[in-house]
Length: 217
Image (cartoon, rainbow, N blue to C red; front, side, top):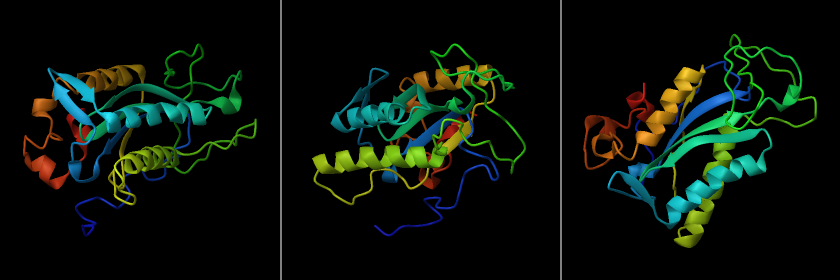
């Protein structure tokens, strides 16, 4: 299939000037290529993962195993897209006293993890322990690559796209917003019949492939 740059949004949709390797919470949404339902189905308001969906779930957890500064929060694998909260932890100043302006933290940690919000264009100091922090785009790229490779190995379809080229993100600002995002993720299966990502809905939003996070917003 020929690639349509307008249809598939190859232009950057990241926040211009923002340092995406900063500590904080990032609400991530990734869609399957052409919105095909390949990860399972919704049954009685619950997501039933198939083999490919289980791979996606496993590889999302793999990110936190692979990178010590990554923490996974609430996430859901849907039939044709994925929602998840990805934390980048502040390992650069572990035990330090740098202020935490939004006072939000990954689940399971006892110390607030600063989101380090600052004006665009300012960079964060390099990690003191020598670990290079990958930005969100590279982390999501790794997740998409390893999950797609395993899925294509199983279905004998090397080189076939599993995911769309880009992804959508929203930067978590405070605990109240994170709570709303978590609830939105949990409710996704129950709301599938009215979801713009559901091809059965055949909504105009589905056809033009707008940002799927607008339903949360």
